[in-house]
Image 1: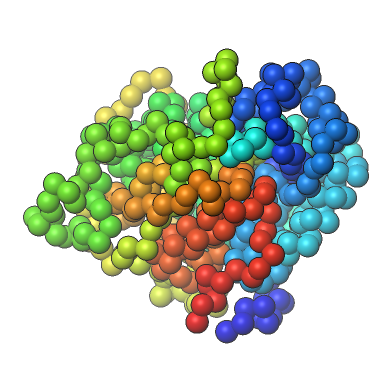
Image 2: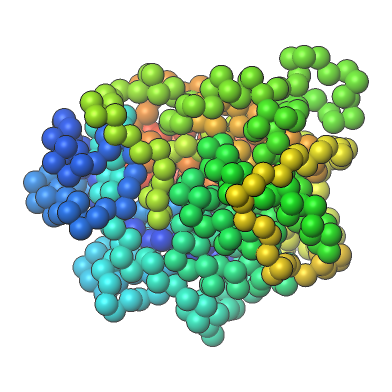
Length: 486
């Protein structure tokens, strides 16, 4: 079926909340700007007052390209491109009343995303300068008006019907750093109305500085994305094992699968390779089960998908300045990619009408009772604000751990599995900006189309690799073909 011809009147499949930014991309020949403004050669930061002058410097002295940016907005635009249908995703976030807002709005509209921007009179539209040096890029963000989104901006007569129509709600991690009251009400709404809540950790910065917020939010999350270092930071600051043990009134929360993932990352649990059924444990060989050493060999590599840092075409700053974190909506390409091995299907629940594309997920593997691991100190305890225990609307939970060029992990039905990453050569990579966001967008496009989990991961892989070949998070000029091969 040609999805371009589908009836657009059916409404949105996805509503996304995040920090909308206007990305300004400039290719630089050396590190002079990095030294002048004390910027990392390959990293991300939110600029201070002194560094803010880099925006005008770049726009006045360099040829630049303007694209829409911000984690959730990137994923939304990619979602629309992969699905092949306009107006099936609605994005919500704050912008100013200035020329940058007009430029950003135009780009978003051209991509097929429906915007429900919160217009802020007294702050400028958020911007992000991307300095591209070979395969390295420095992302300098000033989020401005993107920091504004309150509950009364979300639950309005105009937006509430949109939330009612969509089945999937996506929130980026940076959104909770300034708009947590709105995030929590969005999560409670999703739980009450049977929506699938998707959350992306986005950066270690979020986990380290907002553990209390994450402790309250995570029990509501149905699908969780993050890079392995973000999960390590989460493990240090949020007591997920205690959360899994104490939330007895809501046994289906994601803390159980998340605790198993964190235990595996610590090297205390097993990870089963794809293609091995959980019921076949007696037949597992040493090559089928991954221990802590497998992760420790490559977990220090955080780079573009499928490319080792040692292969990247850029030089480190001689001062050793390289920030590995993403902050406040600055996107990063750390999301890992999956391969095309056989995978147990994650399908839309048969109990709900397909036309509603409900988020209840089922899997054909057997469940397993693995230990949730040991609690650590200095972490936030789970809060009392919990989702309702609605036994008629239970959903499977999915945790996805990406590890750059290393195999990604995912946990479903209390089993942690490994999925191989297909290689991509450094020569194929034009720009790593937004590759991880593209993975999420491709995954959600496939899921919203009723695809099983293996196809969702394959779609995320395919999508991210297409965007790696673009400058900035720019949608390719050709139509996406993954979901339309037949």
